[in-house]
Length: 328
Image 1 (cartoon, one colour):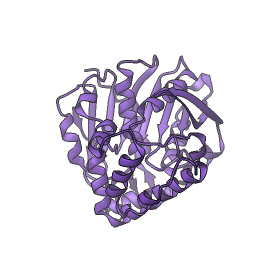
Image 2 (cartoon, rainbow, N blue to C red):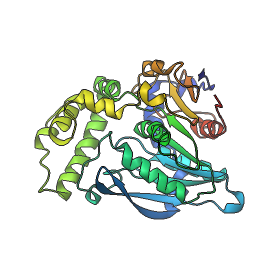
Image 3 (tube, rainbow, N blue to C red):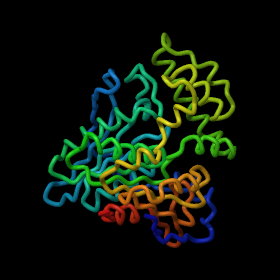
Image 4 (cartoon, rainbow, N blue to C red):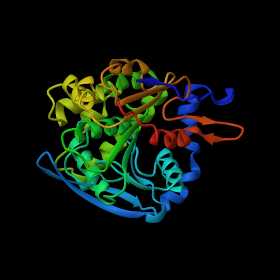
């Protein structure tokens, strides 16, 4: 099912790169959310390993609570990313409890686990989602993810089909990296994004190596000049996958993963997203009526900002989507 939410920003901020870059630096309304909430350490069993992840839980008073929302950050982001703080504070003010989760090796947590983060680690994120949902077992539970976090949100819904989270009602993916092979190629085509993500990935790897110098030597990986090359070395030397094709297949939200999904899921993405090729989503058409696909003309990558007055359109759109149910 395909639909369209109307977003036509002012011409001054209509460019896709402006949307993508400026928006990540202007959502300052989440300052209150960054200072509030209960710091939590989650321990989950996944893949024969005890995995530790951190998060912040901001419970809403029960008398006005509308539900609990788990927010998942993008690749190399964290729970204090501006888009996560802004979204969390906005939804909190609308009556939702908020749980912001740091995935493994994100948000300064490289020393918590010996194993490395990679996109195939859906099991530990799913079990963390289950623990978050159990904090308010009588509240409707929702998962909202951004970029890579959007990919994980969709796969949480997929895993839910065979191991239900009792109060999970729906999942929303904002600009999700559903096809990571195409996303990696797109990053390498734009030098600004390549430089940004390569720098952040290198920093993350250095932190991991410093925490576990007896386990890791990333010197060969750090020498690579593109995300494609770095991914190839990472997969070959530090992952359980035989090659990058197998890795991307495990990581991606494929049509086969969409078929069994039995709760409403929503994808919101933009035609002009410079990182997520919109063509990636055509493979979903007609597979599962539980999917609603909203494609806007403008918005960039997790952008959706406007001027005069300045507003973050994404906040209101997400609130609308929380009530956008596909009964199928």
